[in-house]
Image (cartoon, rainbow, N blue to C red; front, side, top):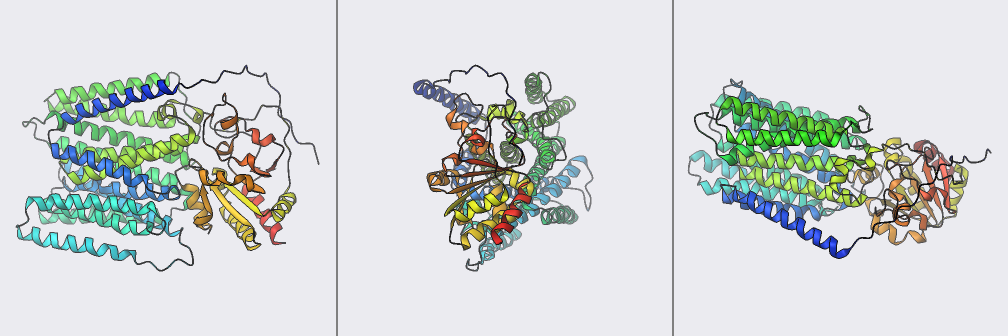
Length: 632
């Protein structure tokens, strides 16, 4: 066989002295940041004219963040899916703006109808996608489940509420209680994802919470009977579209599907904000807080829409994942941010409807451009952070809608989704040892991969027969999947390999890095789809504890998440990033297409370690050959 290739030598860079972190200085900076955040929050809270809504926002954000914290990493994809479905509560804003007859008669009413249809797509599609994902985690020996019975108490509550409201005897406190129960139902649905045994129960509970919110909104509507038919038509059409989309979504399409659903929520929120502004009586001056809420709702909805569209196109590979690197891109973003702030000040200061519309249009347009430019400027490696950040944006847009319409249920649910997205974003950033600012303003995600290593070191290669022999001789095998496995659609073959090895009495475990894949928990869903039992799929910390005992570690399509330079080289571009320590195993088989580095564009010393052999080629083809070898 030909000798293994040697990467070309380049001029070595002078080592940069690693920065020594002063714990006292770091603690002081954190204290200052916390002080600024607390002061800003207190000032913002003082501007809220409705203290009860402020309390609702604060408490629901806290409770929601605690509920999300308990969700297991393996279920982060279903978490994003169910919060995406719940964010379809933007339908309430559209419902309260409906009017006319069988068809809307004014522009605000048309925007309301559009918001209803768009939100219904999310509600139906989001819950169906969540169900499909959670069903993948079912094991053949799991006991039968009757989680649909959880809808019974919600149905009874809606029925009783409807009867009391029909008599006109319902006290105002009943409407408030229904809104609170709706929010608690949504929180309960998310809390169920803390365990595999209760995860599927979260779907009917979440649906019940949404149902209570819709019932509350219906009793708030005071429109001709024909409008209810208009509502049914728009909601039915949206739900049908959502069902059809979700039915066609497979595990590998989940990231772009979630991004696409986020775009619909953002568009619905923007439509609701504009509808409220256009329907407002010019003679009645709106309060400064109401104006700010309207502007913020349109702004946040707009940036969510365009950012989600770009993310969806990148994830679907319709658009090149390489970042858009315009000259002075940070200054462009700052200029659009400054223009948005000027639009807000003008919108709040003027009572002229024409000038107000111009200011709101300025903010909406600049926000759309900002979402487009910022997302397009982020490379493919940072898509997990983008997806979770957009998830958070959609929640805060919904929260603003609650303040616009004085609907506590929207504030509760919006803050729940916003805080959950923020929590997942923090997990993604921590998993890469980077700040959110670094991700948004640039970083290693801008490399977009395919950077040839330049260390000038020699690697060793292994063929399929050698790999099969190593696996047959091993007693403990650890498999580390990466995004390359998802791209190659090799999950079925790797699941069969694991099954064959287990049938031979060998110990087999999978290790999944928090940022592996293109959305949190995506690889867990792919492995579940292939039939890998979830109890042998471990998180990074768990797999690292016993990896030294592994006879063979197979790295399938991963790179940056197993890069030893993160721990061994303080000058590395990914220094400090938590990684799976595959190099500590007795033998590492590294399966990749080529010797190119990962998205970070950083050399991986593991390629050249004595206990590492490279098995180059398409992951699906190679895994199929290994499966055949084990079966021989």
